[in-house]
Length: 383
Image 1 (tube, one colour):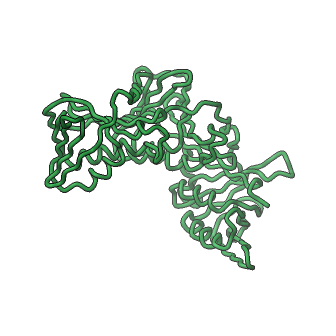
Image 2 (cartoon, rainbow, N blue to C red):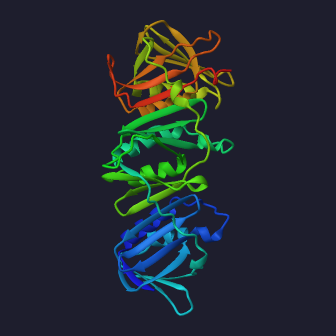
Image 3 (cartoon, rainbow, N blue to C red):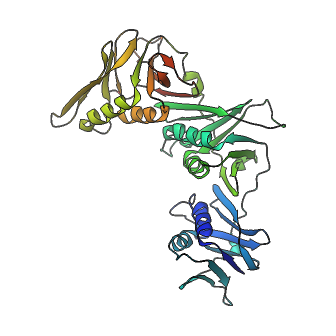
């Protein structure tokens, strides 16, 4: 095999396919990047049985063929090569020779025949706007659990219903929900479709495809090998779905009540960051929402204490509760609006604090778009 390729194009392609691979893989063969040179140019792919990435780029192919080379090493080399075309060839002994300007590298070839087949997806698909999908992922994925003890909570549930795609994540203490438009095309089905995608994979998809036009999302497979594919331009990412039943958290979202506070998002963020400095890592921050604004009170170790208040508009009675400051900050970063409405929901149980509902607010007296909701449970965070 022998081909010539633009350095920047090749470096970006290698970086893309290795991004989803784990830093340490128990099977050395899965650390490789598969490179196929043919009439269509170069196809680069990586796969670890759970996620795959594949892209096709232009190249001058002198001799077609397929090689498998260590992915992260190739990515590191490609990102540091001089500004000149790259030539890659296989020598008589099976070694891989990479030449770029005056730089020369000889890399070991990995056994292509031992590499698993890259998944192909041919199921039902639809389109979503890339920028909205990337934003939705950023607004939701942080709420997924990082504890592998309960795998279903480490994913983001994608649910297609009619012309809407919703993304939902929870870690038991909070729930994030965002909806965006879904174009199912002429073959659109009225049957709801759902897929539980690992949050880490979905976050990489959001970063990779954020600046494209539309992203094609396809569902395929059955049984233990159900997969989902995200494609845009010359790039495709597939992911094995998480098995199990995602909890029915949508029913936890209450109808809007007339007991809420509206506050400037940036002002509340800055105040929470300052006051929380004296708190122990797991301690809640005390909030009092009153007619004169919202006040924060934090008592930390070694007699450290901090208080601060910001202006806010309150509708309903004064309320005091404890919230995890980091969880609240993440929700304030996700609302992406100048003002935030914090709604105090009602409960039939007088001994149990009800969740607070965080939603965007266009202005002090005007509600925002209802496509993003964040539910935070105070009582689980109080001492």
